[in-house]
Amino acid sequence: MSQILDTPGHRPPLRRRFAAHLAVSAARPLARLSPRRIVVLLRFVRRHATAATYEQALTAREEVTATSTLCAGTYCLQRSLATALLCRMRGTWPTWCSGVRTPPFAAHAWIEAEGRPVGEPSDISAYRHLLTVPPAPRP
Image 1 (cartoon, rainbow, N blue to C red):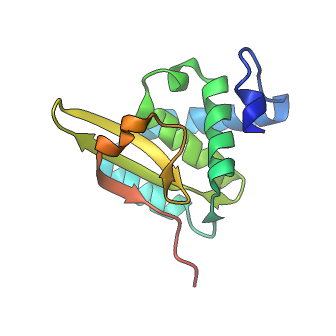
Image 2 (image 1 turned 90 degrees about the vertical axis):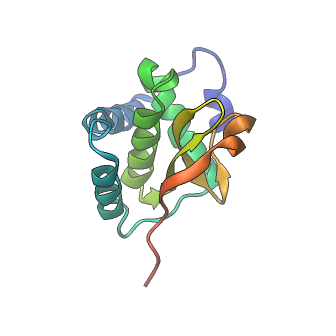
Image 3 (image 1 turned 60 degrees about the vertical axis):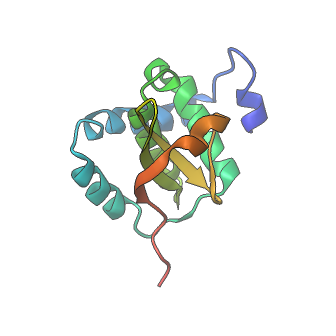
């Protein structure tokens, strides 16, 4: 599915756009919370979800960016939160990450699945993880 969304001007089907729009709408107020509250909330939301595969997480990210021009741009926190929430709506959970790099200083938020960043440029390896919310351990 991700190859289909790479086509310029392609939009996901209406059903999938609606779910992505809900995730983007829910992520907007979450992005205004303190980092501690974001982590607490995400740990609660991830419960009973299975670990997302790279392809599932990439599809969710592409649907979020196809639905929201803000998330397609520089709003990495809202994009990463919306992608994680969209995965959760489908029963899976990626690893949500937030980190920094120096020099020059920059902060970034992203998701990972199967141990690798999803849909991020290669320079993501310069970021040091500060906060992560991985899938919940299975009992």
